[in-house]
Image 1 (cartoon, helix red, strand yellow):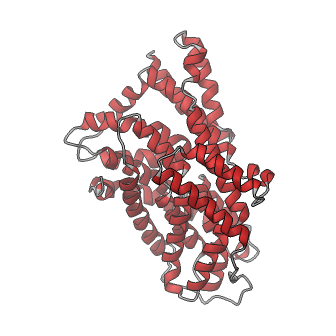
Image 2 (cartoon, rainbow, N blue to C red):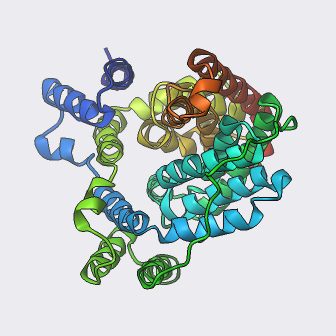
Image 3 (cartoon, one colour):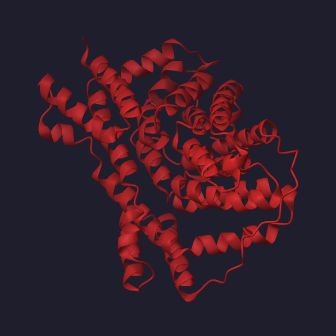
Length: 420
């Protein structure tokens, strides 16, 4: 059998084992890459290790470590909580506000930070506004999915690196705009699906978000964020190296505790992203990428390729991670796939469709976002009594399926290809 096909089948096997056994897909990918590399006799140890992106590892480590310090310091929490509080009485504006908050938190700290933050503030907001907590959580996470691809976030850096290897630069801004369109559509659908227009009268609650004042340590931490942004965006310095430097400066100044910051690093995700890269290198070197491009291109044409890409991204995301698996697997195919389809097919449009589809599937309770939404609501002292876990599980899963299908159909119309 062709080695490229074997490598692709190995990736499918890795995803299946990781999903069923709840094991880290990245480490599984490294193990399979070692077996294929040595057993085939076509790869040396050095060639296998070429797939491990040391620069990417430093970037993910540095950025998540820095924002672990920032999150432990709570400067962003205080700042945004005060913004939320100022709009808390304008009930109609709350869904819009939480989308915006999710967008900006993700743009600064990445999707994981936005996910945790918007879900945590959704509980008091829903109690004091009468909105379904699942609705506010979905809209907030959708905002985070939209803003996650900037020059200073792990998500944006991963995408930028992959696309740069294909000779495609400057993709993050149009990608962000296209994905934001998709997530606004998803948020509107969620508002209808979860009957946001029928707000129930909230009961009195002690969960109102209290106003807090920024302390000296908060201001110093915010200054660190601004220095990081300036160095990366204005000076064009390496995000990982700058992040580690700023992080150590903040620790020296006593802004946060180092042990707590280390605990906040998502090692599972970092190993997943870099580990899958090792197997993807084997797939690429054995011609697996060309086979994958040919297979997708064979079932698609210019009229359907956007929808097909969106659906494939969503389907993969039901069983794996967008950042850890979907992007490393499908993003490298974008340039070649655009050439195969022809008719000036847009690489940015293809990638946008893939990510919109993948992001739409993230609300399944089998995925990280949907799972956290489900567990948070059911584990709450009030909503745990009001919501049936089985019904909520089904509601979230059906919603993710419907949105993958809807956005795949919309992708065919070119709505996620408006910006290039």
